[in-house]
Structures are given as C-alpha cells and as structure tokens.
Image (cartoon, rainbow over all chains, first blue to last red):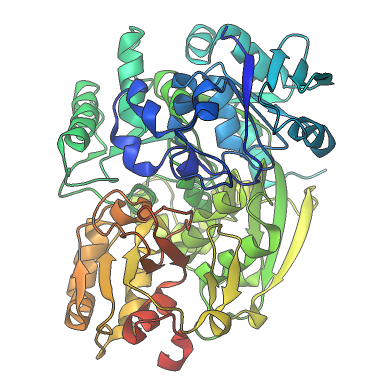
Length: 175
Length: 427
C-alpha cells in the first residue's frame, strides 16, 4: 500500500479538468516519470505556481467539486504520483478520474462542502499538513496551531484496491 | 419494476459483485488507440502478462497523431502495431485505413445494441447511440479489459431525457447536446447514464445520435444511450444480415435492450427542441453556452470541422451546403478533417471536398489531431477557433487558445464571415 498524507496543496476551484492537470501534448511521453515536470502546467489560479515550492512539497491536494473532469487519461493520477501526491480530497470527482486513482492504489476522497470549507480555512497556513487513515476512514488537518479530524467513506471495492496497491493483479487472480 | 437500458445490459453481463455496489461486467468490445494503450501494453509486459482475452473482441486504431509527427508518436504507433500483430488482432487500423476511433469503429459495424464497450478514451460514450453501454476508462481498466475481458463499474443511475419537438432550421444534434449540457452542468450527470428518448431522437440519424451521445461525458455522464430502433437496424444491416432473417427480426431482437416503460429513473428531464437556437460555448467549460444571437460577431482565427463529434459524412454535407459558392473570410483559416477514410472518400465522390477546397479550406487526413492540440491545427497563444469538436477547456487546442464549440453549420457560416455567424441565413 502507498503512504498517504503530508503537506497540502489547496486548489480552490471546482471543475479542475484533466487538461489542466496534464496537457494533452504530453500524452506522447512513454514513461510516468517523464510527466513529472508538467504537473498542473495549464492551471491558472490566483497565487498558484505549478513550479512553486507548495506544488513540489505537496503530498495531498484539496479541491472543490467535479475534480478531474474531462479526459480518461490516467496520466492525471500518474503525474500526481510521480510528484509524490497520492491523495486528492474534494467535494466530488469525475467518475473516470476517481476510478483511475483507486485503480493505481491512490485515494480520491470525497467530503461534504462544509468539511472542505473548514479544511480550506487552513489554506494560508504555511505548515498545513494532513494525515490520512484509509482503514479508519479518518483524516486530520493540522495547521496554524489547530487540528481537526474528519471522517470519510470510500467504497469497499475502492478500499480493497488501495490496500492491494491496484487493480491489475487483483483482477488477474479473480477473473 | 421495469429496467433502464443500462440495467438490462448490466444484468446480462454481470460476472459478479465482488463488493457491495461494485459490479464486474463481461465485455463485448475493448477498443484501443495509440495514446492510452501502449502504456497498458508496456505494463502488461513488465508484469509478465502480455496476453489478450480474445483477439476478436479487441479493436485497435492509430488515430490521435497520425501519420506520426515525431519519434515519440512513432514509438506509440509502433508499440500498438507490434502488439496487434503479435496477438493476431485482425481489426487493427493503420495508416491508410485509420480514422477517429469513435467514428471508425461504428462505421465498421463493431458496436451492437446491448453491448458493453470500453476504451481508454472519455468519448467512448459515443457508442451508446447504438443502445450499448459504452464507457471511457483509464489505462489500468483498459489493461484488465485486454487481459481478462472484464471491467468493474458502480451501477450508474439513469437520467431520462425526453427530447421532443421539430428541430428548427439551423439546429442540429450538436445544438441539442450543448443545450442539455448547459442546462444540467458539467457534472450534472456524473455517475449517471444519459438515456435519450422522444420523437426528436427517434427522427435522428445514427450520425446525429452519435453526436448527441459523444458529449455525454461533458456533463460527466458514464454513457449516453439511445434506444435501438429501425434506424439502428438500417445502419447495421450490412454487418448483421447474415445473423437475422429480416430487418424486422433484427429489430425484435434488439428491442430487448429498450428501456421498460415502467423503468425507474434518477431524474426525468423534458427538452423541447422547437425553441432552440444554434448554440455555442463561450467559456472554458462545455456548460458555458449561449445562443448564436448572443455570440454573433465574435472574432475568429481558425475554423475546425472534424472530430468524433462532428466529422461524419452528414456533418460534411451540412457544412458544404452552406460553404458552397463562398470563400473563407480573409482573416481566418479553415481546416477540415474528415473523421474516417470512408467519410473522406464519400465526400470526394459527392463533390464536398471540392466545395471545402474552393472555399479555401485545408483538408487533412482523418485524425484526432487539433481537437486536443496534438497536431494538424494547434492554436497559437491568444488565437480563437470555431470548432465542431467537444471540449473547450483552457489550452485544449493549444496553450493560450480559445475554443468555441458549435455545430458544423454554425462553423461553416462563421468561416464565411470570419467571425461567429448565424447559419440560418445561409439555409
């Protein structure tokens, strides 16, 4: 199983799409590692720098509704993975992106808007970090001297994929 | 309680339910292209699992960047080509026979009512036009599909769209789906099937139904689905006449996949197309739509007609009908990319290619190319494109470029005027 948690990158907008996460022109790369420099290259958000230290240090992304909409490209979770980001927390996800995350053994965690508002209140905390317990179904937000724990649910299948580290070997054994 | 089309297909293809809420389905067609498949092939090789579940159920095409533009794209094509040969995948479409996947595979008769179809491409929802459950998936799901012929899904709920009314002059399937996306939003159908019913859909060609279902994903939909009928049978007849004694027999069989009258829906949405106008996107999301009256006069740099949304023969006929006898305005350039070689050849026979070329269009070979900013018409920073494609995300057709999605008719009228223009005055 992958490890989850660490410094948080806040992306405060809904409908962040796969072209913003990894532009199509990089889909000609053959290895996941080659995608690394292009993370979130086309995302335009106030104060966001795709090459800045917050992006480089991030282990968790927090965003809003319909995260990962658009293309089916698994390059989107991969570009996160090779940059050390293994979990995305959002109000909702596009179906294909969400499944791609779990299929790679990564976590796409949905929280209600009210919880996300509380988490986003840490957006300006330089020390904002999150710890995530997949089996317990809890995550804890730390920053600015404050701490708060939230509970979440992921489907039993998706949890099994995270614990197994992905879908291919599981499916090959079972089907 | 009756069932929706997707529920019937799920029940008929269920392998098992490994966990509550997750259903593993047997697949009828696994479609592959050279962008998302080579990484799956590479991973299968690394795992020592370079196998395919059934070479007759796997179809593959080189379509996104073709002919290859550089070493990287040539390598992707080669990986797919070598793999297809190695595994005896007979339905592999290489240069000369290749076209945009979601136009080519239906044209070859590969998609049938009741089928389960996956592809590592979000616009796979197009194939639901045949009464199939067709879903875009990522590379890992594709890998498992190739290896085992199964895919896991959460059973989607279904939204029923009752689409009625006569399409006004200048309003087409593209305008209808842009209007619907504008109404329900880019995540209005997430984890939902969009099932299309009503007299307007009944009167649509298969080409128009594919345009409609193609953009289901732009509302977050898992699959668009139309109800199989005689139009479906007529389209498929050259491929199925050996299987059925008559078209009526085929229709009787395919009708098993039609939704039951008492099926239960998550939502039912009524759409009256009689009041629609040509519809165009204005922002960077497909749900940001306005009427042509509101958008007319918007300056343009490029007109692009093609793609899995609107690169079929019907689309070329509509655009050529408007362009005939006209020239591109001097401030714009035009690119036509017929979606398949058959479309291109048919357009030549009908004199449509002449009309486009006399208007000043560049005619490219069939490819996805410019639609996703990969080749054959990428925009420069600050340029604006009137496009018959399906996605207007920031940077989609080139970094810093702006895309306005519209029908082939509106694109053709806009080509003549060099700015967004109302097609109705040319009809």
